[in-house]
Each structure stands twice: as structure tokens, then as C-alpha cells.
Image (cartoon, rainbow, N blue to C red; front, side, top):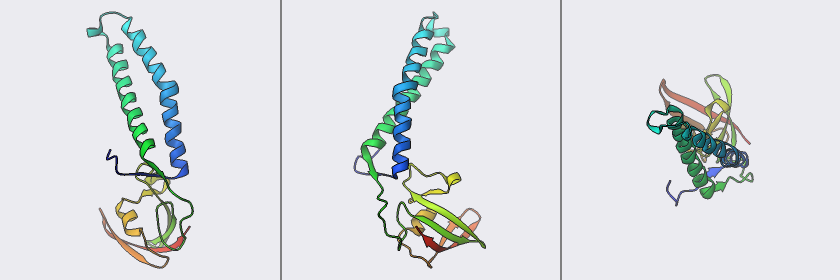
Length: 155
């Protein structure tokens, strides 16, 4: 991660990352270390699949812990005091697309979850919406072709 770039997070997103980090460091990693120690006691390490799996799991966990530490160190909390007149990170936006209403929340890239209608400000739609006002239209290139969105509300 580039140390000059900030990781934009909502209050909820920051809490989720802290919760995951605390769970890994306080519960899952100690259990993985014990599993590795127990597997080591089973004998010949060259033919011990449990040892190899435990070692791999611990390495993956350590990598994720380092990644989460980087995110927490570079986190910049998104202010809830944003204006409702233009789309910004942290905004909830109601759009008209293909004859129906869709609601999205613009978040930082680490919080993006399309299933939850949380889109990154770096996504094609997120980039197109940034700085726009109610009533404006944006066109976004999608795999199925260009899609036209009209901004109905900004919260």
C-alpha cells in the first residue's frame, strides 16, 4: 500500500475492520499457533499434512493481519457532515435507472460491497456520480453497454 494514500472508511466500515483485526489477533491467530504446535508434535514434518495446512493457514492469517494494520494506520474517517447538495463519499444516492429507483451508498474501496449496494467512489459509477447534483444525469459504460442514471436524491 502506498503510505501517501489514505484509506477512506465510514464509521461502520472502520468498526468492521477493527472487529476483524481484534478477532484475528485475539482469537484466531492464537488458535492457529496452537494447531501448528499440536501438528508439529505428530512427528515427521515432511509427511505431515496437518502441519503443512496449519502452517499455511497461519501464514495467510498473518498476511491478513498485516493488511488490516496497514488499513487502520492509513484510515481516514469519512465525515457524516457532507453536504446533501452534491454527491460525495459517504452519500446515499437514489438514482433512476431503466424505469426503476436504485439506492446506493458511496464508500471507500475497502468497504465496497455491491450486494449491499455500497459502491466505491473509485468504481465507474462512483466516479461518474462524484460531485454531481440532484437532477443531473450520468452515463456509465457497463458490460451490456452504456447505462444512463438520473440523480433523484442525495442523503
